[in-house]
Image: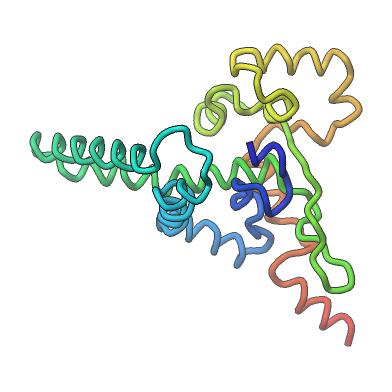
Length: 220
């Protein structure tokens, strides 16, 4: 629950996606390259989901070695099955790479669109300021819903307000909030596309990867 309790702070264990700097071509390319190369996924395996990270967190109700062991056994069986049927390449192509790279890239896109403020990163007196806690609900088309928002995860404000509500009731809660005028008051917290929002945030030139050089040149 650190994501809900510490949204927008460094104590959020799931802040790595929405804290990514995506403003400007260089920054955006670097984030996507790390994700699609598998580097970010492998970093997560070691630092978040690995046995050592689970032991350090100290919050697991099962032994820290159990989940990695089950994962290793499952993947060995799956890889062995692919080899047995003469299609070994299906394992990296349709399973390993999508999990460690494509899924990570999609998670970064979705999470930036849900949680990154328009003015991030924000500076005052040359010092980066704290991030404003923010959540956005998405009402996507069917393809984006299928690709990024399974289990009604697109109703993200609803999920943050009431994390215990089961996924099949989130749409009902969304309709209730809309009927009560919540989204009329907070219109900026609902969007039609996570992809579109991500692109808009990457094009926001207020604080992009060239801003310091531009501001220095203008000051001359």
